[in-house]
Length: 50
Image 1 (tube, rainbow, N blue to C red):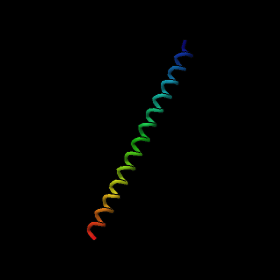
Image 2 (tube, helix red, strand yellow; image 1 turned 30 degrees about the horizontal axis):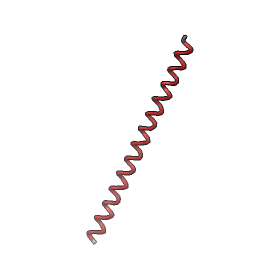
Image 3 (cartoon, rainbow, N blue to C red; image 1 turned 45 degrees about the vertical axis):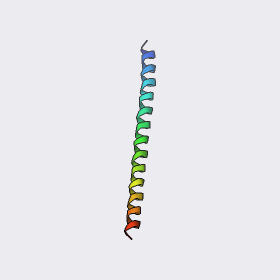
Image 4 (cartoon, helix red, strand yellow; image 1 turned 120 degrees about the vertical axis):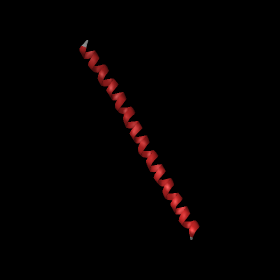
């Protein structure tokens, strides 16, 4: 009985860890995309002022 519970716990933990990793990766990608948009906007603004 306890062995089965331990297996279920490990399986559940693995699923949670995968979800956490997926969320963290999505957050990193979002931040990188926002940074790129800001840089592009600054470059466009600089081009317009010249």
